[in-house]
Each structure stands twice: as structure tokens, then as C-alpha cells.
Length: 445
Ligand code: AMP
Image (cartoon, rainbow, N blue to C red):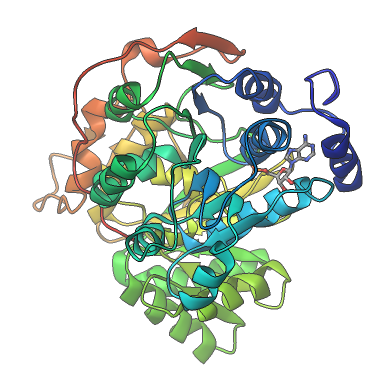
């Protein structure tokens, strides 16, 4: 199969040739014809498998071939993403794909001055990539109109639809034309989000190109158990022992990021951090320098968990496990992308046993434990497995603290026995369900 046989037009084929894309990935093979045919979509595909081109290519084609010329302050297609970095990245991909088309594309997000964005929008934009907060600001200041909007894409849709964004999204929906094409793309979809999504979509196709809620099998995953207070020491030890070159590290909190960066820098290690409290320019610079291998260790909150494409990143370390199990899949999906291999190591302390159990249940695997001599924990991490069992030793006088309430709460939701989907492609209609249920509030990274 080629991109030409999927029905893409010549200017797009030329861009793809320049980029060296030869064969469509499975999600592209499914999504491109469906989007071109005007269908609504709910597409689940593993991280790093080419989702962006899956929606951007047909979208650009529709914009180029159909519909009126964009008018002042209008936008014809909108791609909503959860983070500013992802907005930049998606727009950069769109810009490359649209190289040979007479279309205007742009990205807007918070943390930077709004005035240049208002100026740019004056003449109208065919395709706009945006984070929800800044989009609303622009709309409220009359810098944006949606009367010409024909397509809405939610990238990382499950994150976009969770409570953290639900109010902003509800306000955006109210402003959008009812008649439009809607595309939802994500690596993970919880059952709640599927129900909610069902209300937003019109006779949608559901595309699944892999079993639900699993990371790419190109990522080798394992954990090291350790006492909480010794995590920084273990990290440095593993880093030196493994001669790590480029590592993306996830910590739970902004303070946790700062503390680890400070510790590493104090040891003369080339480290930087990104989290929601830092100015956008600082965040983007840290990320760009990491991508260019000028920074060796990038420590981040979950602001970096979604969608970021870092070429040939060999290793992701979970310094802390994520509160929400599905974020584990997104985090480790930063490595092992586009068919390359990667490694994901999680440092797990006794407090995190429920989070570990939730991850194993969600991903239907028992993570391999590798003990590090001299770092065996005094507070043992109870055994866990993919069934969700946490085996507590009866002899232990103290039970481990269950700090992972959020993760634990997810256990019943994410997996059901019917969910072990076949690995092959499947397209099936999605049932519309008139329920609005968005599940527990998640922390903003
Ligand atoms: P994404 O999942 O959209 O973030 O894409 C992951 C990476 O795969 C990006 O670096 C893309 O440029 C690359 N990519 C996407 N589609 C293809 C393709 N058909 N052939 C080669 N590389 C691709």
C-alpha cells in the first residue's frame, strides 16, 4: 500500500517524499480514507505510530480541495492539544505536510504574548493548532470566529476530555458549528471517555490498530524497587552504571522536578527540567536543547508525557510512578517510537504499590523486577501482578501507605475482560450513549 493508493493528492505526496515517508503506518492506512470520506472518527493507536499524519494529511487535503476561502479571523479546521509543546510539534508536522499547498496554518497557546497571535489571526487561518485556554481567550477577545469551522480534531483526546479540560472544552463546543466533522485520536481511551466521545461524534468509525491501552512492544520495561528517600541516589547510580546518554525522567510534582534537577546539576550532570510553573519560553528551550542532545537529562512532570516526539530517545525513567495508570503508557511512549527500540525503567517505592498494580492491570503485564545490590528497600514493595493483586506479606507489622488513591480508583474502569482486543486492525461502528460521565478529576501537570 502507498500514500497514493489512499487517495492523497500530488502536493501532499511530494511533501511525504521529501520527509522520507514511504509506506503508510496502520493508523494512517485506516484513518486517511475515512477522514477523506468525511467520517467522524475515534482512533486509538499506540504512541509514536504516526497519528499526526493520520489526521493532518487528509485534513489538509479537504481544506485544499473543498470549501470556501478563509475569511478574516476565521478558522476552517481546529486541532486541539493538551500542552503547548505538543501544539508546536503538531503544527511543525502540519507545516511540513502543507509545504506545497496554498494553505495558512498556525499554532496558538498560552504562556506567550497574545498580541502577535491576534495579528496573525486577522487574515484568517485554514488550520489552527491550539491549546484550549488560549483558544478561548482569543475567541472571547473576538480575534477568532468559528462560523467557517468544518473539522475539529482532539489530539490526545482522552486527556482533552477529562475533567481538567472539561469546562474549557464545553465552552469551546458551544461556540462551534453543530454541523462539522470531529476526529478523536489517542493512544488510550478509557471506557468513560468512550461513552462521552460517543455523544460528540456523528455515526463515527472506531479505529483500533492495536490492543487497547498497551505501550509499543518496542519498549523494554522493568522496575527497580527502592526506598523513597534513596531514589535520587539510585538514579545517579543507575545512570553512571548504564552510561545513560539521553534520558527523559518523569517526576510526580513540580517540586520533585526542581529538586532532582538541582541534585543532578549539583553533581555536575547536564540536566534541565520542565513543568507547568516555568515560563513557556524556558520550557520550549529546555525541550529543544534536549532534542538537540545539548541537555543529557530532562526531568519533567506529565506535561511532557503526551505526544512529544523525540527522535531516537533511548530511555524513559519514571522517577515516580504516575498517579493515573494510563499516563504510564504515554510517558514510556516517548521512547521506542517509529519502530525503533527503547527502554523504560521505573523506580518504585512501597508507597507506590497501588499505582504499580494499576499500571500492570491496565497494560496486562507484570513488570519485571530487577533488584539493584545495595539499594534493596527496607520497606519492601509487595508483589503485584497483572490481575491487580497486591500480595502483602502477613509478617510485616506496617502496611505500605496507599498514596495512590487516584490510580487505585481507576482499576475497575480501565480494563474489562472483553477488552483483550486482537492485534489486527478492526473498524467498527461506535454506539452513541447519552451519558455525561467524566470520571475522577486528574491533576494538571
Ligand atoms: P506521531 O505518532 O504522529 O508522533 O509520529 C511519530 C514519528 O513517526 C514522527 O517522527 C513522524 O515524523 C514519523 N512518521 C509518521 N508517519 C510516518 C511514515 N508513514 N513513515 C515514516 N515515518 C513516519
